[in-house]
Image (tube, rainbow, N blue to C red; front, side, top):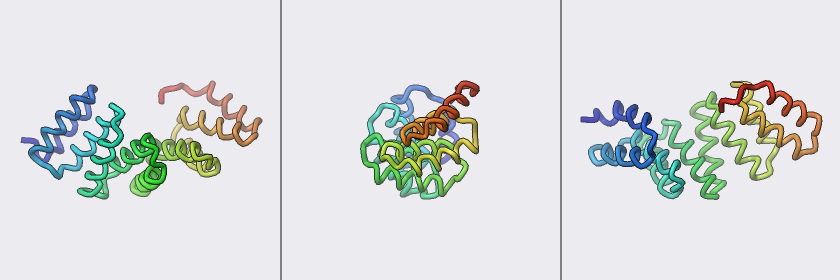
Length: 170
């Protein structure tokens, strides 16, 4: 008995094999077809396998079941970005940040999207927010690239020199 799947989610999240995650989520969904946690976890499993269409479908279903749960929006944003649907990616990543304004990963992911779209001002803004919340190596690296792209060489060099002092864990 999965108690609506909630406690089973923790064991699913500890699994490292995406195929195993998908199988376990299928087991939960066979019992509880509207379980948004299992849908969200399965979406992540599909992301790890780079099966973008399936990841997008599960994330959308999870959002339909529980529109207040942030992770399906994050999964939808990432999978849509990788599936080259930039409009949906931007909409989804913006929504996840409305639900959780402290989610550093959301700011970094949306900044990557803005950077890809050559919207450097928005990317810089998101990265500065992320850096303000954490000492993110990835965020500082991307903001250094943005400064360089915009011919702000001294800002770029200052940012990259800071990277040498940050312990790279992300």
